[in-house]
Amino acid sequence: MGVEAGAQVARARALAVLRIRSRALAVALLPAAVAVILLAGGVGDRLEGPGWDAARWVLTPFAVLVLLAAAGIALVVARARPAMSPTVPVTEEAAPDLYRMVRDLADRLDVPAPSAIALTPDCDSWLEDRTHPAHAPPPVEEHRDIAGAGKQAHRRHPVAPVLVIGSPFLWWMRVGELRAVLAPVIAGTGPSAHPDIAAARRFVRGLDAAVAVASEPRRDPVSRAVLAGAGWVARLLLRSCRVHAAELERGVAAAAAERAQAVDYGLRIVAQEQVGLAYAGWDRLLTRVALPAWRMGRWPSRLDAGVVAALTELSRRDRLAEGFASRLGERPACDLLEEPGTVDEAASLLAARLFHGGPAGPGPDWSPVDWSEYPDEVVDRKWRLDAARLHRVLDAMGVRPTTGPTAPATVAPTLSRVLDHLTDSGSAWTAGNTGATGTAAGSTGLGPDTAGSTGLGPDMPDPAPPEAAGPAPGRRDPLDDEDLAGTTAPSATLAARLSAELAREEAAPSPAAPSPTSPSPTPDPSALWDDRALPLFPLQPPRTARELLADHLTAMVCCAAMDTAGASPGLDWLDGPTLLIDGERTADLAPKVLTLIEDGDATPLRVWLSQLGIRPEKPVRLG
Image (tube, rainbow, N blue to C red):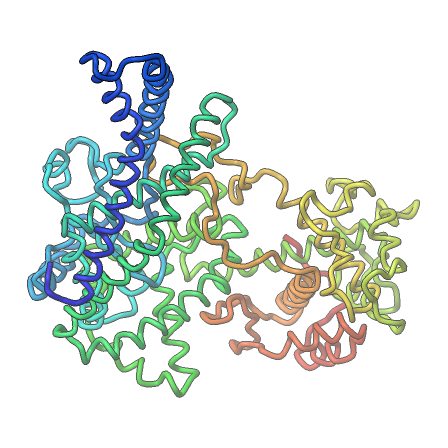
């Protein structure tokens, strides 16, 4: 360990953590030490008498129980598997240039090189200790994770931590920028190799893992009672170590930053700007572009390449980002990989699993989609499925098809039907208004001759019974949502019914969108991380009823534009699905949709439709 001030602070804090561990061991051994003294005094005829005999009879069993309890707690702490970040392992054969760059950087910093490299679908980089026996690699003939790990499986000397790199960095950053960003991260392997710091970290991670084990639900009362006691002791020790462990990590980070100042310091300032830009582009890509595809059972297989496209589009639109586009002529960091497409696909699948909870591998209901296929396979299907759901709810509410001289002779679904229903000259809906809930919560509103006028064909399922129209268990009643305040009564009713319909669809088991209870109640022993609580990082809170209605109404307008005006679905890298008319992106639809929902005024939307040649009275094709 170097002479940096941060390293000295980290070692001092590590010793404080180890002293807490020693005190805990001393407390566990104290009754046994006293019992040994009493027994030895009795054998040597020095501690005799009724009082000493009673003390021996009481303290000896107590000491045995304390020793057994301490041994059990130590066993739980030692065997508990510390948490490990889900990552995509990168072998040295798959990225020799990347491994060479990391080793050269470690040599310049005079620190141990990381033992392996892995990628995470996030805009961050860190070192992760995976030396716990539970994280040990399988035999060499079965191992495919990190290069040369089979030779290291039985080594006793310390192993350097694994370098985890955010996959968006590899695609957006240039090689020099990535090197500058990774310098302070790799410098952290120096303090991490110190025996005291490593021992303190292992102790804290073991306590944290023991608390997690004790928190798992169990039906066996004996194991539940034993683990409850172990969990209480582990929490007590964690509270005692909390401040010291936090200061230890701060000291390690300060020492790493100080040591890395001599390596590409000027370039690191520029690279930090790229970190913030990559984070913004990655977040926008996941929430606006990837999430709609995930909800449909499709996962974009080139998310990292999409970050480059999204940030390039941002640089084209934003004058402040013009300078960033000039960097694209330099060598990208993904060139350090032998097969960037394969790595990108693996990181994209892991991102879908972490942020949405998708299956671990492709399947018939969970298939990859290329960016060139996204408009037809995702955007078009999403709009038509939303439009079909909207008309299905209108059928259940008993809303009649459009009538009039321009109405079609068939009962096919039309945009006019939706516009006429939402057009209202009455008062706005307010929270607690029961007038708007009569149809949504009280009855389906089906007339005697409604069954044949759904426009969805005779094979469609019957509308849900009244009791099924309420909120799903654990969800608030959509009509009690304050977000609906200020909308018209028809809009509030339709929004509530859409929310209830979508809740029923999400509650139904689906391979493409598994529920939190779908994973096995017991984890796979061979898995390196627990996947029973997916998604680990949900991207967005559930959409409100107002947002659902706006999305479905927008989808219906887009379907009408595609079927009657020759429009086409498109992909906007920053805003997600978009409607293209004559190859141009339409950006003025949302305000007109909100005016219809909030004021019941369809005039602005009808004028917009007329200007673009969209025929709302014409039937549309649903999904």
